[in-house]
Image 1: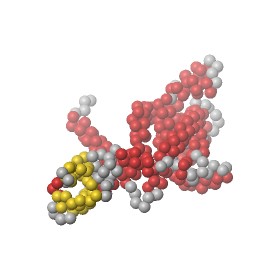
Image 2: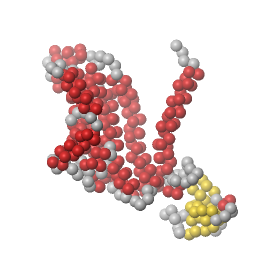
Image 3: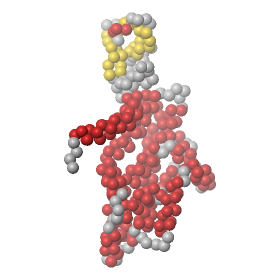
Image 4: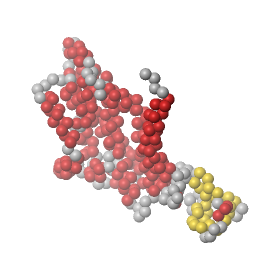
Length: 327
């Protein structure tokens, strides 16, 4: 059955409208990151970053408008290469010219203002690497045991595993903290990556559903040839499961990259902070929030995961779609 243009429009327009609505916070963050601080909270709202120019001593120079003196005159500060010269003059209001001028230097200034940004980035990347490796290996191994190996009580244990998904983190937060403190791990990165090597219920469920739809004839043929379960798992199941493994890795990478509560609980030294915790620390260490620098830093933090998603989108969609198929 052919779909008319009208029917396509009825589907496309709501999707486009929803996409615009969900993208607005992202665009607002990026635009704020490109503004000078005085334009981040103006009334009426300034959507695009602009730079004011005025004719001073016969030359048109960049200025910062401080306020109107009357209907015809405004007071401005002449700007230099460092953003301010301390020279204040009065110019005709009609002579003020505003042009779109993104402040790309805000990103470099944000990195400098945060101080330990490279250290935050390194800590976050190390955690992401360790948690992704641990989650993929442990969850795939457990999922294989629940899907391709028959053993007494398997399904009941799997239901018990799924039940753990209903236990919220705040319930186990204090016991976990007490355990890690007794082990001497508080103030280190170990509480944030070691648990990844003990499979999580959601990832096991996702991988199990994918493994179950793979033909069992492949495993049986390998067993007849004398292959062990480990050989079947490594040589047959894992190569066929690349899409869902990428999905699990992407989910874990995003969770670790954006994790704020875990580092807040276990980390004590600023040099060990992650990007998410470093952003919060940067916001709270000043008397007034430097919104343009904060949004610039937030853009730098959010940018890599957005780019990563676009590169892994094909595997992500394929893995999710194939996971729902029946064996």
